Amino acid sequence: MAVSRALLLLAQALGLAVTEMALLTTDPPWSVIFQGESVTLRCQGPRVHGQQPTAWYHNDKLLEHTETNTYRIQNARYKENGRYECQSPGSTSSNSITLSVSYDLLILQVPSHAVFEGELLLMRCRGWKAGSLAAVRYYRDGTDITKLYTSAEQLSIPQAKTHHSGRYHCSADMHSFLSLKKRESQGLYVSVKELFTSPVLSVDSSTEPLEGSPLNLSCITQLSPYRPHTVLWYLFYGNSTVLRGPTTSSKYQVPTVGLMDTGFYSCEVRTESSSVQKWSPQVPITIKRVPISGVSLEVWPQEGQVMEGQRLVLHCSVAVGTGSISFSWHREGSAEVLGRSRSYEIPSTQQSDNGQYYCMASNGDSPARSLLVKVTVVGVSSLCCSHVRALLLPAALGTLLLGVVVVHVLIAWSRAKRNKAPNAHGSIYTSISCAPREDV
Ligand SMILES: *[C@@H]1O[C@H](CO)[C@@H](O)[C@H](O)[C@H]1NC(C)=O
Ligand SMILES: *[C@@H]1O[C@H](CO)[C@@H](O)[C@H](O)[C@H]1NC(C)=O
Image 1 (cartoon, rainbow, N blue to C red):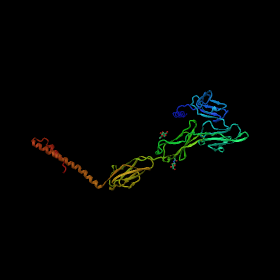
Image 2: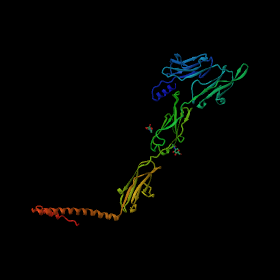
Image 3: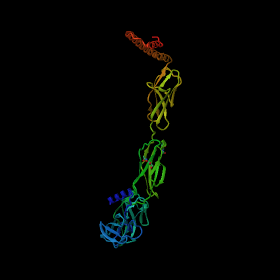
Image 4: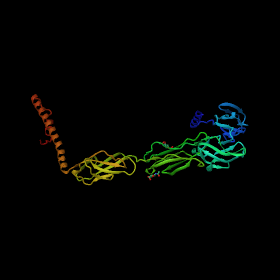
């Protein structure tokens, strides 16, 4: 049975067309009857209308095939005690019902079918001879519960809860010959079954989502396969106030979350009539700021080279990060905070402003730091010297070049003299040697 139920659930999960379980009920709806009484078993298969041939099982043995979906037990005897199941075409084997044929004088009649939370739980105390009972009392686990639930000679709990499960019995005064005698029924265990499991709120991805990201919540519960047509309604709560629902969707999506969405979340599942309501535990969800990263620094003039007295501007920017961002400016080796805005400006630079600068950006927790930028303030005096140096270098190179040329000319001239050949290129050498001279 457990295996077939698991397969049924699996098939449902896979979205397959499944053969439904047949539903076996009795009329009257009691699991205990007196000997000699009659009861009709009814098998409800997937075909609601029209009769269908049905197979009947008693204590796992095939009892009979019937042309209709009912099986009648008349004048019940001890041999009819036991477990019954049925199967109709196109259905899996039904739930089982245990029938007990009693020879006692006082019986407690409890439902033959499974009772689920939210449903009516009815029971009846009966004597062997009708009309002979007085002072009927009902007990659960030994406690007298007559006052709470009894009316019109039966015990009635309109919306049963699982905590109503227990061992029930009744007592009554019965006429016995000419005297009244108090009798007790046998105790019977009645179980009120869970219609659906207590829900759990599931958070897809993290319970600490980043600001601006989606938040997907699912309310997870498992409906009993014996009550597959129950419609469940879902509600979603944030800080105990309803955010969504009642809705038939078990999912709730916030497309983009903000810091205000931080809170305690939970969900509720209920039946349409609210006969059963269950709440999930609360789940704390904390929306986090997107941490700051990619802090970069720009500097004007570029390269951080600035003439003394000129303006220097540093600008801090952040590539990633949400929320209000605070900035601070620092110079390496100093604890002093130079500024607290996005840009830092020195209107007139001094030699003392030389150094390595950086900025820090923060949106809450840990601040992120930029790379260092070197600022060089070029003083007026050193500026003059560097100009002189710039002039001297080409001068020295020019002199060197001229020296080389002069040496060449001298060598060529001495060769020509040695060969005693007429100097055809004399004019050229002369013109070179007449090139403008630099003082050495
Ligand atoms: C949240 O739900 C949306 C819409 O169904 C879906 O596109 C997205 O992938 C889901 N996100 C997560 C983290 O499950
Ligand atoms: C929940 O309560 C906290 C604290 O009062 C508040 O900051 C937050 O915005 C609330 N969240 C929601 C979803 O109402």
